[in-house]
Length: 444
Image 1 (cartoon, one colour):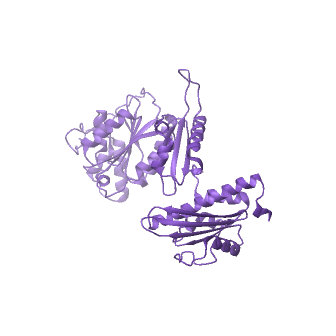
Image 2: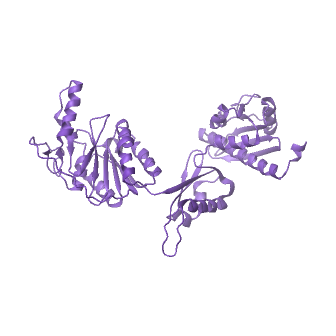
Image 3: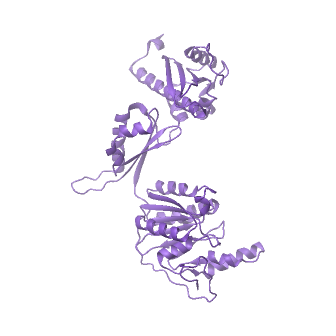
């Protein structure tokens, strides 16, 4: 194996040609369980905005699903001192550091040099890796570029990660304290199979993450800042369970994550599921019926369940929304749970003499032979628009008027969400009333 010199001054050290014996990596290193991780995406194309990083989000989601806490994600330019410093800092606070990018053959691909510097080891040319690279070029019928020797580098503590879709092997580096550095190439078509087929299975065998339970509460009608006030600082700063809010396009999500709490100092063992259930109950007590779904729920799924539970179908008429409501509920439309407006043009602008919304809801319900009629009208105004909602069902009728932020396409989407929420609340109210006995309208 050919030593190339410590990566201190030169950005592209040239390998000597004399080969030495393959160094042996110690197998006596501690087997540290991976509970925390940091992700570093390397490449000036990322920090200049020329390319968007999608790898870090995918890797973070995969780690979180296995119970690993991602404590940091960073974008770094192709500067050796910055990559080295970030890598050293990440190793100080994480069990696992994942790097993406910087494994190419050019002088500005510096991830290997940074890892070698942090590990205080000297890169060498692995003859097996170099032979594989030369075979690849011969198969292509091309002369082998000497710059590609860099992709055959390895440090003594690194194990090569096969790359079936590219020329850059990854590195699996075991530190003396049991921490890991895993270096993967930047192109997603190379990174994904390496992660899925090689890295992740080995991480799981080693011991990945902590047993945990996650519950997501999907809310509507409460802004994130108001939601934070209702939840309170004590709840949002607790370590176990952890509670966080995330603003989405169709909801503000409250995510609860808990781990099994071990006994100690007079505490009894509490399973994660019990901790999540108690926290969820406390949150629901504070925000009432603002929770419209849980976990992966969508508006079509929630409304579809409520309608199916009553054996009802829905007919929709919308005006001025640009079709936002039908677009929001498209899966329900395709499943046959909605009949489109047969009464008038769905996207017609509201007129001063427009039919009253409750009349229109009744008309679309009758024309479609459905049990529920929903009519929605979007009224643009400055600075905020209004959405008017009319609902007719076998139990009676309900009218609603809500203000929505803005006036453009986003306001039209918010109007559709407001209409979906009004229908949800109506169906829940009808369900509660039916449980107590038939209404006057139903008896009639």
